[in-house]
Length: 125
Image (tube, rainbow, N blue to C red; front, side, top):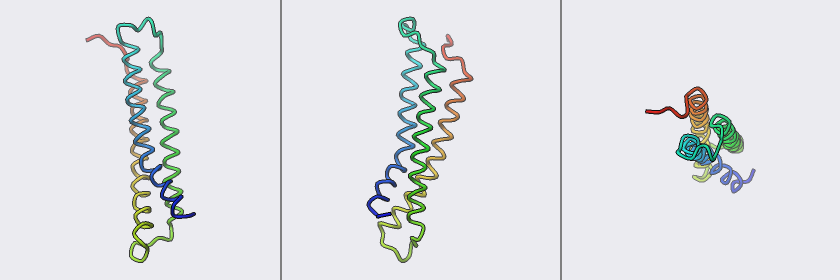
């Protein structure tokens, strides 16, 4: 693959998982507020169904970001850190960081899903 295409994939892999988790977290908070707020009868929504679908979509995007990071790792497999130019070795380094961070974001989303599904959504204090 060309270096420019690898650079674009590398940024998608690096930021894709974090953005997917952040969006799922913010929209999940909004769903929780709609479910448990004062106007919950007007919304008539199921917290578990919405959260499960939201987190399932975010898991898909994290897996796509992980695939992008792995594609960059495979595309820069012949890169050595001593001999190659800084851009190729920098792309490989950030792809390694993306591959590791996407696994962590995937685990966070799975734990968030489990916590959402096995917890009571609207509990009075």
